[in-house]
Amino acid sequence: MPTEPNVSQPGVEAAALDAEVIIIGAGVTGVYQLHLLREAGVDVRLVEAGTNVGGTWYWNRYPGARFDSESYSYGYFFSPELLAEWNWSEHFAGQAETEAYVNFVVDKLALRDLMQFGVRIRSAVFDETAATWKLTTEDGTQLRSRFVVAATGVLSAPYWPSIPGRERYQGQACHTGLWPKEPIDFEGKRVAVIGTGASAVQLIPEVAKTVGELVVYQRTPNWNSPLNNGPITDDEQAEIKATYDQIYESCMNSFAGFLHKASRKYAFEESKDERWELYEKLYRQKGFAKLISNYRDMMTNEEANADFSEFIAEKIRSRVNDPAVAEKLIPSDHGFGMRRPPMETFYFEAFNQPNVHLVDLNETPIVTITEAGIETSDGERTFDLIIWGTGFDGFTGALTRMDVVGESGRLLRDQWAGGVVTYLGAMAPGFPNFFIAGGPHVIAGNIPRATEIMVDYITGVLLHARDNALSYVAPDEDACAQWTAEVHEAATVALIAENSWFRGANIPGKPNEYLLYAGSLVNFRQRMAGMGEQGYPGITFGTPVKA
Ligand code: NAP
Image 1 (tube, rainbow, N blue to C red):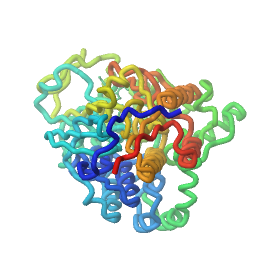
Image 2: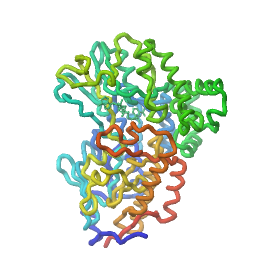
Image 3: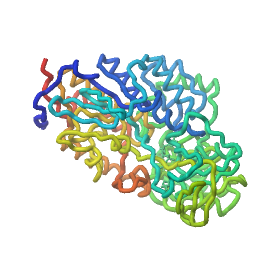
Image 4: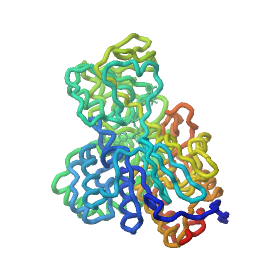
């Protein structure tokens, strides 16, 4: 049962607020949230740290950055006009096109006037007396709202490992997740890439095209497989436009929001020849087909997983000329899909170039970054540019790097230090009126499809509060505990590597726990769709605002 909310004076005059709702972040999720609330007549505004919209597609402008879910399964589906007017040029659009798309949507929907750019929120403090949030920006400006929606992204807090000497380096250095707007010319340069995750796997072949010398510093190889991108032909464009309804239904009735059809067969129901035939077919298919359209036990049965992993290993051996380099590029500590499998285009072929070298950090670890380059136990190499493809403090980082202070002075960062607790991934206990539209416990898969469900839900909760003149909205402790247990339970079904950023394993000191909800998008969607009719169970709605 809902408890009596801790609000002694239940509201402040609306005039004292900068907005009823402030959204943080103008990525794909924040833009959708802004649109829905504006359409519903809510007094809403959005603040964004960057100088324009796009979120991930604004910050990650490294060469090669692109979707690995099909473009037409990633964009917004809510407006037939937007769907009709936008033509994706490739099956997997690049960063520039996606950034242009988000700008197109924002302009088309006339949302820009409600946005403020170059505003990074440093702290958000809940005022228990007034049931409002006070946001303080990095330049000290204060904003006040009744509700906050953090659309701060799941991969938006770049991570630099604490390798000694980083500050000493005198050459150019950049992180894939904070790539400069001014393009970098690699022609003739000596370039280092640290890391071999999905970002570096996209970047490396692009750098290799013109670089003088490229050295890739790899700690853990991943199971990379071909993206199989290509331009969308006129016929395909017509087909996509004519079938958007089916594309949407197919994504929203799937496990993870992707287009690919799940297979019904178990791996060892078929002979090796039959399995290899399927694997060959999958290898030539687009994007995540290798994961989703594979045998249904590929992600639950160790042997089935090892079988497909061996097929991919053979492919790597066939594409890399030097057998010793090929072996280094084949993962040995996890199977395919147990960590996020990157999608590649000529990644392995880059290592056949005489000017591209692989350094295995397990054999020769980095000792220090020097003024001129990188020193491993094998000696120093000098570089004009060091690229840090070292990932993100995923899911929680964007929220915990702000000082988010809830009831009784509790800090979100401290609350989650021993493990994340949320209600449906949308709220955290002790942080009333604060919503998370895409953070920890988000559905694993195609992120816009997942956060769309979340934004629809948050919008429903906010409108319910408005329509009933309720100023205080908080998740119940029991509901949070129950949901969090469900998240952990769902994570036990699939094979998931210990050493994965999905578990926070890339960030020293972060608890090792699966940070996504693996209970399926279709189930989550159905559950969330019924919440409004049930009066939003698990949430306490508090005292009405006094007129
Ligand atoms: P990532 O997968 O976390 O990879 C980071 C890399 O840096 C890893 O290879 C890691 O090695 C390495 N690293 C970290 N600390 C290191 C250290 N101290 N010394 C040496 N190496 C170190 O990050 P990411 O590549 O940016 O990708 C993150 C996620 O972003 C992806 O998994 C994906 O979900 C998303 N993404 C999506 C797309 C897309 O949709 N198209 C594209 C790019 C990225 P270890 O593995 O040994 O830790």
